[in-house]
Image 1 (cartoon, each protein chain N blue to C red):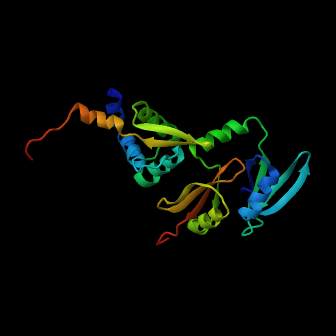
Image 2: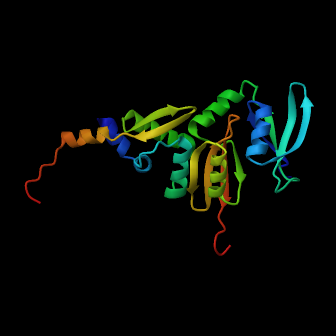
Length: 133
Length: 93
C-alpha cells in the first residue's frame, strides 16, 4: 500500500490552481470538470509520477469549523518537503506569501509555516542530513 | 492571587512562560513544537491547551486574535503583585 493522493480543501479552485502552480510551482496533473467543480490535482515537478494533491472545494459545512479551528491554533494542514527552507521562505516572501512562522530550526529539521491563501496553513520542512547516518 | 502560585507550581507551565517571555506572540502549534523539540516535553495539544488555560486564568498569559489566528503573550503584572506584597528590603548585602 502507498499514498497516491491526498487533499487540501480550497475556497476557490481557480485561485487555488493559480497559487499552487504559479506561486508554489506545482504542475497540474488532472483537471476534470465535474459539474461546478473539477477533479483538480497537482504534482511536484520533481516527482510528476508521485503523490497527487487534490485541491478539493471547501463547500461542505464540516470544512469551515474544522479549518478555522486549525488556523486559529496555527496547525498546518499539510507538509511539503523542500531542499532549503530559508531559500523557499525568501522566494515565497518575495511573491507576497505570508508566513505565520519563519524558518525555525527544530534540531532534526528546519520548518516554516505559510498561509496558502486558500484557507490552509502549510508547513515547509527540510530534514537535516544527520552526521553518521 | 492563589491562582498565580498554582499556575507557577507546574514545571511545564514555567517552560511555557519562558517561551512566551521572549515577547513575541505564539500560537498553540508553535508552543507545542517548542515543548517537544527544544525541551523534550512530549504531550498532547489538548494538554498544552489546558496548561495555557490555567496560565490565562491566573493572568500570566493573555491571548490576542489577529486575523484568523490566536496568539499567546506573557503578562508579567501578576508577578509584580507578588513583589509588591513581599517587598525585599535589605539594609546590608
